[in-house]
Image 1 (cartoon, helix red, strand yellow):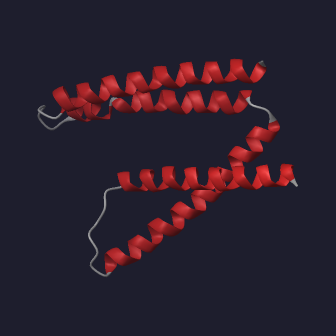
Image 2 (cartoon, rainbow, N blue to C red):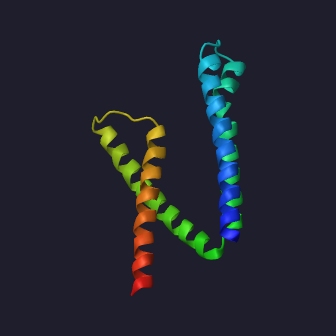
Image 3 (cartoon, helix red, strand yellow):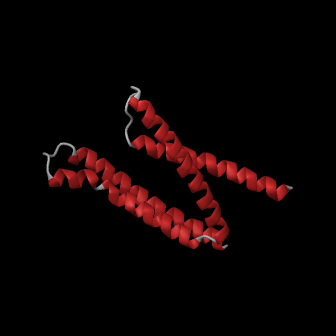
Length: 133
């Protein structure tokens, strides 16, 4: 029962943060881009980060609520994703010096997400095999 309550609280907090992010993102694109350069434009274009910070808060609160085993599995998958992301982005950085097209820093976030998904899947399958044997 505790896990369901923890999951429900996390989904609620994260969904709220995502809604704030999307609303501020759309507003910053619509109203921030046309503004003249300056502090107001910078603040408007950075405003979606409020929602992003709320996402970080939701994640931190979730990690504090989960049990040690879940925390250990999360840390292990994030550590592997961090290493994979580092290897991929450093490799591409070297390729950029050889003339490959420069990529936006947003691509690092995509690599991290895919790496985390792959690492989580592999670790989950490994844990399932260990339980079955």
